[in-house]
Image (cartoon, rainbow, N blue to C red; front, side, top):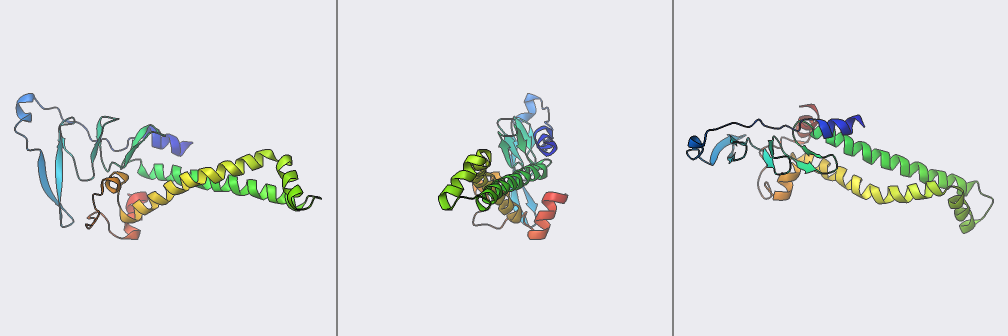
Length: 196
């Protein structure tokens, strides 16, 4: 619950807005080029926040803020996932995956233990185990369904960590067919995600 609250209530990396008077906004170029690790990256001007968005920053239309290293806006936690709360989001997703595996595993084990200790044979032993522990059966079915979602989400984010991409960059295809200037190898990518 603490990890969930940290993800939902924490600052995702909102970049402060700049207040400009109306006379200067027309003179500002809407794009600038900067070099990041030997690659030219275009910085876009955000008309809402009046800033040049840093690399990997994006404007969230739901929160109406520019978020540094914007990953996505998560409706389940009601907050953007960005540079400052991404590791807590990952811990939340990974712990949910572990919890589903744990609950499903022990539910199946409980049913198995009841089948083995039953005096019945074959299918009757299975039916006796299910009727003796219907909650274990329902929980096993629920966990079997849910593991595809949380396990898939965990796997997807592990892939994103290994390639040092955000969900936003992956869905837009920002680095498809190109070298990712932000990827520095597996160990460094994991270190940047969990320790930076």
